[in-house]
Length: 377
Image (cartoon, rainbow, N blue to C red; front, side, top):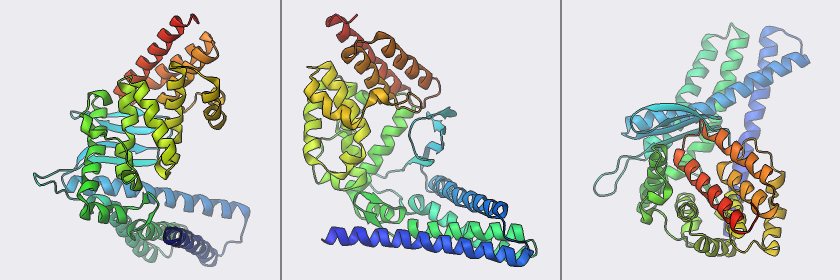
């Protein structure tokens, strides 16, 4: 009951603030009509909507840009910055512009924290840098709207920008947590007081840093991939660390252990497992195809995730690998399997993590070998 009340509080605050943002945008639009003397029209409403959307997404970008700026000021090392499918990634020597059309956040910033000998690390400025940036730019926009009040269109857009900025300041800055989801304010607070969380955060960023350098998961330290426990799965960062063992086992071709782990995760039926269903289902289907290839085991997973019907466009590498194995080992369709192999090579041309591509190529090669053993080829 207590958890449900917390979630209701989170949702109520979130949607309440969003409703206030929409009301503010409507009032700003009416202010423009009053100042400009323009008559309401469909075109004017469309321009206002586009202007508000631009301000909203620009503030989202500034949240990541602020984290980057304040992270650098705190001694963090740049790893990755993502704007939709464009990814700037550092391999430790230079920054490369890559393309990752697969599923991912619109704006993502990942940096490696400096860690002292006693395990301490700066967290406040990095996690709240975006909030500070949005607060500064929103306040400056309020001032700009007053200075340029004689230019209705410009002052109106500046007010849109300010309203969106203050909205993000509130939803990102007020510490809030809903299940494993947490905003920047809560993450800063949680990392500050919890050494295990700081360790998990460091492991996650170190993994990404090495992945950007082309290092395979199987070649990373084993203690970065602990077996999951229910306690660890209660929090976002700890859950991400423990779920990384799936990639670790797959990269080492330990399929039997992987199947036992997946069975344990299905029994947990916790939020991180439900959120990471695409990768886990893909691994489950692949392991079964490579093993006993039982229709009764495959059927429930294929009903929930019909991979054969999924478009190859924007499909993650791990799913392309499983679609390849499915076409080859289950449908015995060599042409369909080759199509998935070509899709992986197309994705690999600009993919930021070469080690992941190498892993999926190996898993495709193992599926081909298994097909030969079964007389498919």
